[in-house]
Length: 485
Image 1 (tube, rainbow, N blue to C red):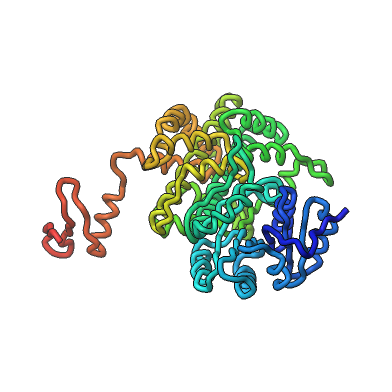
Image 2: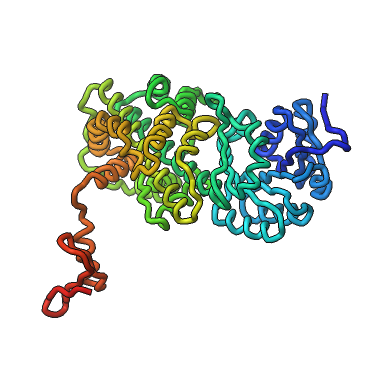
């Protein structure tokens, strides 16, 4: 039986945009005892939600923005779940016009954080509050408990906190939601979360590639390997679902599903934004950036086809020269190492962004709320939280004593895997770039000294010296004397 709240009742929360994510989020609110106002530009989706799921809780459907706003208790709270960009701006404008001072508009989509900063200023100028909230967990998380990363004014969190806690995932009794920081902090953190997700998925794909085409294993066998891995250090949502995907057979052909899926990975923008922002902040998020490029390359289907038809020379391709079981274990350890680099680089970018924009984001909060509900939830997030509990000013996550100890056991297998992949002619862009990043951090000297000398030669860009302070230039076109600038 459909349950619709009485017209005299008021809703604690409203949801605008009732595609799958918005609909599931509304159902989650209702299931947890909240009266939920719902509105969609096309009323068919509103009616479908009430018809199919109205018995899950109390809903107040509306067919106009004005009726929707009127059905909300004060201060009004409305979450927007519509396509990022112009559609979001249009809904914000409508709600701002219909709402009153002190009301709260929440954008739960994957908005670019700079758009969120702009929107927060514009809405605040009209006396309303605006909160950009990253929501992770996909369709299932929206329904059963996501990880939520709200930014915006601290005053808004005081109002929103209890209702968001009512629907968030929980780990050890702690809701996977907290106030991240002002204006765009929530969407920035969600952006980097997704960047880590890109890298995590790519290194899992590279591990599969090595086992499939290096060790000659079939998808069903590899699925069992991933199930075993998920019982140990690699315990995570993405490892878990990888086993499910690899075990799945295509219903039409009976072939492994992975063999009938076109090998061109899509992307919606958050990984690309993470890479771009890393460049703008000067943060070397090499593994994350390579995972974005890997998706782009996979989708360059015409170029790939031309390269295969043109038979680009491969050189000598070796066969696997070690025991298969040993190789599988090496790949497991290399995967763990590359995942640690992805998280370490992601936390570096969040730290840099927080400093740049004055957000004061606490990495311990992120490690706590990412333990459940979100796509990158993983067992070692507890260890990450402990690392920042022990030293909130870690220069890099991998410099924590625990993770240094882990890497001591991972580094040799990691090197062997990258070497083997090269000899086998198998691309492992994130395994290899992450290893180069690691070696760059530990190197006493880098070739940047030569690069700086080159820059001084052709552009008089000057250089620093190792033996004394100051800025220097060589008169390259003259007598090559040293000048202190």
